[in-house]
Image (cartoon, rainbow, N blue to C red; front, side):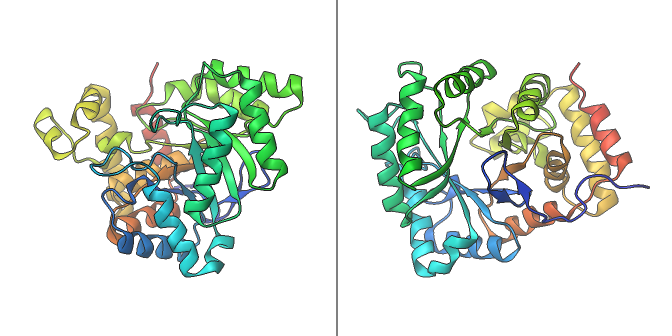
Length: 327
């Protein structure tokens, strides 16, 4: 049985045209200050870096949805972790975002908002630069060139190294790339789209061609389809197991259950967990630089680390491709 995918599990990958290199998994820090306390966050980050992984993803809004939070909690914890051992910062590709609504005059992608938000994030993160700064959501009320000029200022000041876009449609991304080309302003060199074994169509039918032709990096989210691909949800009776139950329900169709069965077959062959196989699959996909995944405990982090070392065979990939076909 031949194998396909990564020749070395933790070999760094070039992130588009940014000059940054990241390992094949990005840690999602949205759980910090929400379901993970500061002490556990430090332990998770230590183990993540010790395992040879190097990219962490946060945002100024994380985790404003939790009772008592206002946003910035995740960045604050990361900043304290950096400060505790300053040499950690040089080992990390730091990704954060701007543009989510945080209150009056604290939303969108206006120049004023971006410059102010960047300074706030740098202060919370206790660092002098952000490696990759993402437009978290599109802002149809602000001209694209205004947004890109603000990023240009931050890049010229050395406070941001590269920029990208999250949650942008293919049309919005094309428009931003065109403005950047026409005006010679910095362009989005990284995109952050949803992509997993179930949600394949948008990335594969549209975005992947753009990623490859424009030499963009792609850091994907919801690699486990909001937890569905972990195998915990087999019927509507299981939806109470998560606060995301209503969002997971859409996956409980014949195709979704076929995907779970195939994941179980592959997982058994490798003595792995379903989630590990699902993430390892994303890591093999053309156009994908790395998926984002989170953990709320060291045990869960161990599983993410195993996913980066799992090499799927051609037979494994063929089976997963067949059962998850979307057209």
